[in-house]
Each structure stands twice: as C-alpha cells, then as structure tokens.
Length: 295
Image (cartoon, rainbow, N blue to C red; front, side):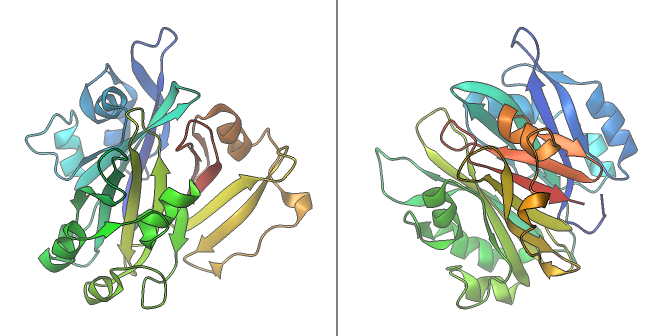
C-alpha cells in the first residue's frame, strides 16, 4: 500500500465457527510487515480491541489516538506511523458478517480527517458529529465540523444517509454540495467520501474520509451496484488519482458473481485481490453496494 495514501492499512475480521470470537479474515498492509504479522496471530472477543468494540457496540467506533486506549497493537502502530483507526461492523439480516478496520496516518505535509456522524431518530432529525480525527488540519476546521449538523440529503454525510450508498466528491470546493467547503479549502482538504454504516441500535451512522492532494484516500475508488435484474454488478463510480474519472465499463466487462466484488456483495464479507479490497456496504441490513479501494 502506498505510503502517501491517507488510509495506510485495511483489515477485516470474521466471526469464528461458533460465533464467540472474531478471527483475522484478510487485509492490505503495504510495507507494514511487522504489523501484519502481529495482526494475523490475533483474535478478539466482544469488547476486546478496536474490532471487538465495534462488534459489541453494534456501530462504528473511532479511535483518534492509540496511546492510553484499549487498542492492542499500540507499539506496532506507532512504528508504522499510524495515527488513528476506525472499525465498522457489517450486519446482514441481523447477523454480523465482518468487522472492517481502517488505519490512517498523516503528518505536517499530509493532511486528512476521519469523521463519524450519527442521527438518533427518537431525539432529532439532524445528523451530528460523534467523533472526529483531524490530525494536521488545524483547530478551525475541527471547530466548524463539531458545530455543524446535517439533515438527510444535505452535505456529504446527509447524502450518504439518504441514499444508503457511498458518496464520493472529487472536489470539495464551492458548488460541490460540501457544506464546509470554505473551511476545507483553507486547510488543503479537497476530496472526500462517505460510507453509510450498519448499526444494531436504531441509529443512522455515516463515516467520512477527507483528504488533501498530497495524501489521497486511496489510489482508486470504485462503487459497484447490482443491475436491475440483480444478477451482475456494474460500476456506478470510478475515480483514479492518476487518470481522474473512469468511464463505466461495457456490460460485457461487468463483474460476475464469482469475482471478489460479487463475492463481497453475495456474502457480506470483504474480499482482497492484489492491492484491491472489496467492502460490502449494508447500512440497513442488506448489502446495497460494494466499495472497491485500490492501493
């Protein structure tokens, strides 16, 4: 995985045969061989470590620092320059199929942010910030974010909430629909995507990734959805940092159910192929789309 992507490591965990533990399912670790070796030997019970916390809570969990936390690989994360992590459960038909964990890193020259937004329907019509990691973006952008709320369909989190599918914004400048555009431009943030997340507590939650030119979220981002017949997937969005917007592939090139994208859609479990990970998106108990991240 390229060192200068904001997301440095992605891993996923799956319930074991009796459902009492999360076992390592796969991941992309780039050059972080030591971190990968430690990770492959682990398993987590409910509430243990970052994956176990997401499993136990039934919603995404964001750790904006590892030191002094329940995270179990603090020294290894520090060695790799990882600064924050987030874990999100994938729940299909009321059953946990996997927990996906993503770890990010930035420095003075590589800015980025992760945010977790939530709406509690019984309390409000708004989606508000639960927690955010803002790294080197500065206090001003964090302040604006913590004092902003979204209605369904408004802003990046609100659009993902309304659609129940990932949303990608290539340019967060004015006219993009990103409600914090002025603040983002000032700190160098230019791209973002939002993922509607599964929950078991009745809340609506969305995870957003925001990145700067020097630190793209990933080398390529793709969203895949089923065609009308539901038998095959087609790409509804493709963006490459090298080539820009990607044309939709011809129908003959659509992904068959047997490929990693189709398997992720069918099973609700992520799949890795080469430097790509396919992540099923299932915000309302069923998989609506698959997000493919290439590194």
